Image 1 (cartoon, helix red, strand yellow):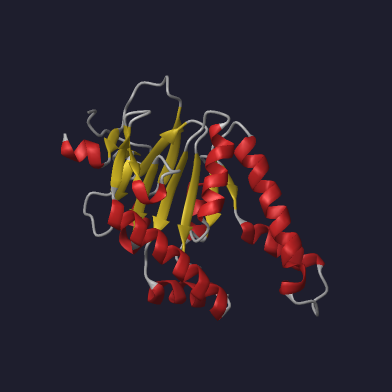
Image 2 (cartoon, rainbow, N blue to C red):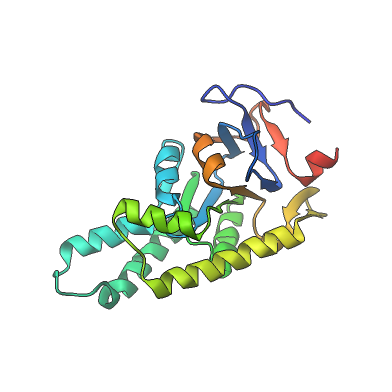
Length: 236
């Protein structure tokens, strides 16, 4: 197992495998390191800081954020027209964008609520056809913090939508926490049992979210300079 070393921001770069729980941890890397071309899905409640985190990481990869499309459509639609009327077109454009990004060759960061396992499986299959991996970062900041984040940005999700996102994210967190990780016999690496389509799941809370300054995407042929953390690493 390789030792940690200086990352892009002077801290330790971490190459996650399996389940990596950094909630409440005093050992948080400055950089998360993923394979070249990986698709990294950042999930969490509305207001949990997904867009802020993605902006911080955006120098490393293309970002697919549905809020960008929402704002773009909103700018050209009549002010009297409710969003619900043209929401299907926004979603259709979003999935076209996702499909193109997943089938491309470069790394991708995806903004997602976390409550749609079918979407993660679809992304994993699409990326896998190009020999690319799917990874997941989950922001577990709690309902109170997420609602405060919505207030701070001056935009609140509808109550029913927020409740739906909360249920979906809660199922995801329960599944990951309950099952932990198992070793995939095909490739010999730990795979999160509750999210079998992902090569890794990184759990962040409010504190650890602020300390992960960047992500990097490193070709497999590049010399290893990162620490691999996951259930198998801790058991070694």
